[in-house]
Image (tube, rainbow, N blue to C red; front, side, top):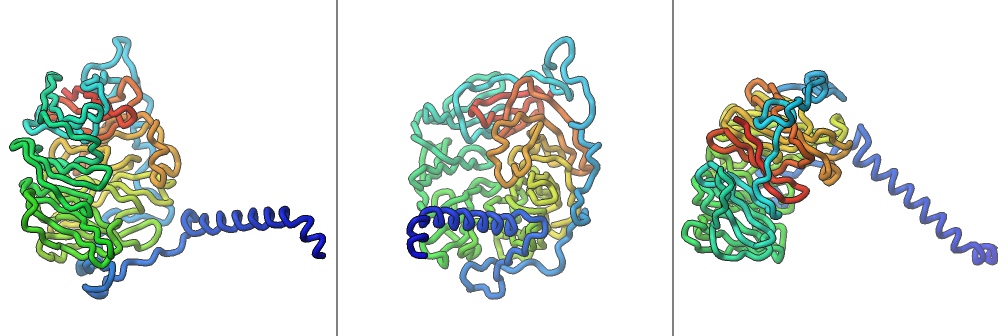
Length: 423
């Protein structure tokens, strides 16, 4: 027996290793992907000072709006304009103005950029050129203006203030600064702060302060000069469940999620003064949010097993006593950060023409897709195909000029900035 084992020892070990791999694959499938996946434990919120705790939910049941039967998605696939036959290109070529057909898509800036946002005067965009290390403003006639003559090397993340005069700049080594483009001055922020957003008045920031010990991790606010640091909530080991996203209404500084099962989470709202806001239900994972102009509605996306693990776009009321009401599935498969509000009612979104299955779980699967441009009426839920870009562009960082005449976006594949005429 021993001779047999020594002779075939390597083969036996290989067989055992393959059996172990198959066992682990089955275990992962049953845990994460099987339709009747086991319930994910909720965050313990029974005590205020427990490690990793977050504030308790508001009283009463979450208002869920449109209800789903198991395995059912609301709406009718036939309502999706992508399923309807249409004349995509006229004999005269691309339309110069968005009209639901192939539309001219104009190159505005040719270098790789990040952080594109509507400029302070509302007519163009401002952004960071990753090749030159400088910030520029592009006006509505495509004239380029420096925001500062200073070079900022290797900026990785940018969070703009609503007035567009300030930005939090994050660097690969963990360094963070607030730069004021009006005064040309900067303030250094702690390295252990992350996930920044500005108040509507542009005078404060919210961030997650991540301590070496999770017990010392908090959601904090501070003035943009670095003073008056204030702790809002203890977040402990749950920082990945917290979203820094200050509402334009100035009621809510952040949100956090708690799992109810694989396909649903509760979304809770964190105020500035310990308010006990209602919660709302979100349908799945990777929740991404986008506030309306007035902060009374929240556009969000999430994926679950009912949507083939593809992101679904929803709208819900999110201010005061109306939180959780009016929840609608917009029946578009895209992410909320590919959208922008032109006013409090209408939003424009880049929607992939084809979206691979499981792209919500693995967003990189959609990096090579081409997007269509839709307009959404967030009150009625009606959606309209506005433009088919005359090229393959992955729309990110979209913004609409204040007069509603142009939509600017960054092509995620190249970092170049383009525009489409809406009027």
